[in-house]
Image 1 (tube, rainbow, N blue to C red):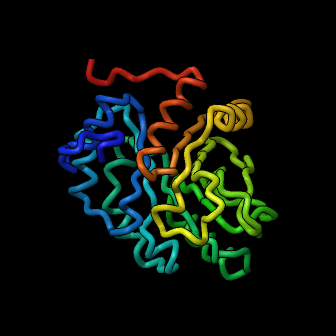
Image 2: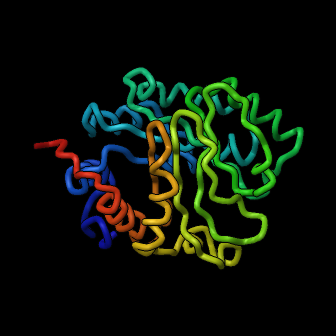
Image 3: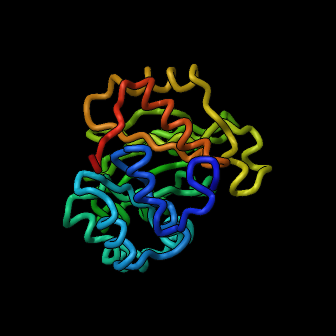
Length: 237
């Protein structure tokens, strides 16, 4: 607050402000990781944004971190309005560093892909780098993470849609708390290098910044938009 939003803004006004002020055509919903969303709240988000605004929805942590498949049906029911109105990029399954390439975890991933449409899978552990994705309607997320031993590398393995998540390069990742590990601001040169790597992809590209400490994500997104030649979308003009 105060960095990219007015200090006195209400939570209920933040999404509309984001659309009106910054003009991005998409947002990644992260709160859905921390608590199961309600159908009413998702409908509310949809109604506060234009019809050409799309959402990426992060799966509930009980699914990806506790591997409880029973949460999936309720989660899909709560967010179905976005699928019905074609307002969703996809569902993001972000697995923790402890989720390594094992037969058990591959079976869980296959089960998840069978139940969830438009699935984007984010790995943190580099053991998955050698895994070949043959799952239908499932893409591997390209991530930028600190170059720490064991961390998943920056790789483009997408087929039809390239989903990129930029977390920053904080080398104290495992020492910091859940918020400060994302304390990183990308330089112009770093963003130019990332742009060079992804711009040759043939298909839709969605780039989300998750270095959200002190508003760095939105600041970097604005800089990246300028570098890539993107334009502010005048939704309400």
